[in-house]
Image (cartoon, rainbow, N blue to C red; front, side, top):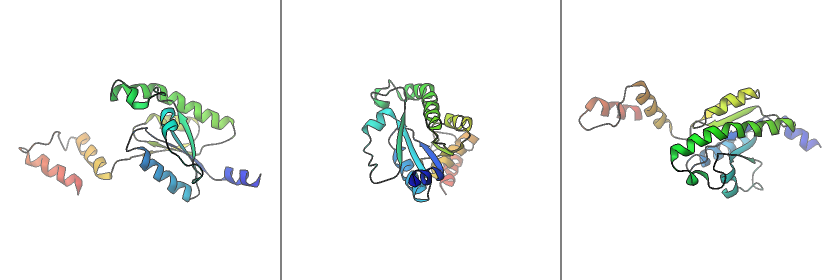
Length: 176
């Protein structure tokens, strides 16, 4: 009983992963750091990834939950295209994630924080709906984020060509 009460006193954070290669490991490593710092963590992945993930719950106190991405039997490889996968995930994922939060809340398992992959911005609205703090997690390096910023701001036009010295120097400046 005391262990259960102590577990409930630890802040609970859901970490919502975009279920593709390159997104799972950085978020899992971040989850391990949160756990080490005393935060109770639940890693949330797609149903398909949950079935295929080799996750040793005996070696960590990180819990595992799953939501639907619309391709529960085959994940992203079952989609007709990357765009098709994202479109369907954006249709199905928010409802499935909201159902998960509702399930946890109805069991008395409050969630104080949702850390979500930057590919899933809809998670912030759902976190707020349940009174949780939301934080976006960028799985790529800061240099990539800087390049995205400069492209978005119009400082850097893509593709960068050998003919345009100013764009090449801006690109190199983004990396420093």
